[in-house]
Image: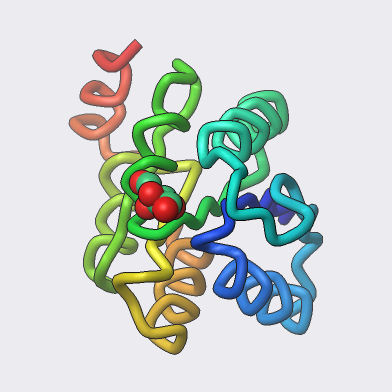
Length: 143
Ligand code: RB5
């Protein structure tokens, strides 16, 4: 599965760890913005790049990391084909795949230990959408 991974300066360290973790597991990971640590970068630039790429590649997923994950989720969800979920727990990650068919995972480096973040990433990427009719209908209403 292709993974588009973006971050701003506040998510740079965790994004590096996530990319390394996923590449070790055999995922095809594309580094999106930001490519270097720059305190003046904008989370919205990374979010728009990842959202655009995921929207054009339906079998892919996106991962966006900033300080809290909040800015990334706000920005990514401006794309109508994106369902970006800010997750703090394994339960969040599991349910947002099962119920929302979320295609972008947002994380906050400043609010989470690396180990938990990597577990959340794994849960998000290995949980399939349930395809229950009631969840499909709810997603349809988002458009
Ligand atoms: C950057 O300082 C920080 O505001 C940003 O990474 C993010 O947390 C915004 O939601």
